[in-house]
Image (cartoon, rainbow, N blue to C red):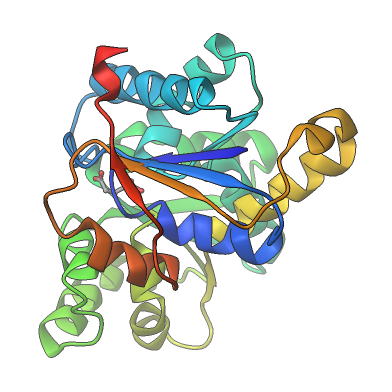
Length: 265
Ligand code: DGL
């Protein structure tokens, strides 16, 4: 199976893109709803959580791990790659590469959680790939709850997005990375406020392309993946709105949802 995890529902926006790209592969999703949010926690804590989440998925049969959380990708990807015995793909490297290919004026904006912005991961990667590129970041802590509440185009949401994008637009960016897996839900409004001249980069789409490349190269891994359209869904807490919000993020109905305490394993 392809294993996908996030702090909660956001990663389902990535799973949606993975299902679109690989409709026949079985996937297993884990949302760490008991410990969400990751976006305002320390690197050490997020790394520990990410290791527990990924290890749980591997025990359940995942042969490939997609870190469908920008904060966990920012803080924990290197550790996961070192410690896990299966390939790991995050949402950050594919997005920054796509942004560098897209930009015409070498000015890229990134919006994300406070943790992702604090990690400076996009800035560091861009410097390595193309030192001419400038990356401007903006933390947008209010956007996660707005996406979960489905306040996608309310006047209040538009005002908040305008406020967050103002400094990035003032820098003259022509490309904007949605550096949080919740934000694709707000993509239409963000695009509207950013204006047509700014191209949006969506994390799920770019990570799906990275998975495609990996499976092309690694036929043994490709063959080890189960081909069925029946997916598994786990969350560390299922008392909340996970199912309703999750259906929206996934763009279809979540199947049976099972509670799992991954910290015990
Ligand atoms: N899905 C998380 C991310 O992409 C945002 C939610 C959180 O803070 O845990 O960073």
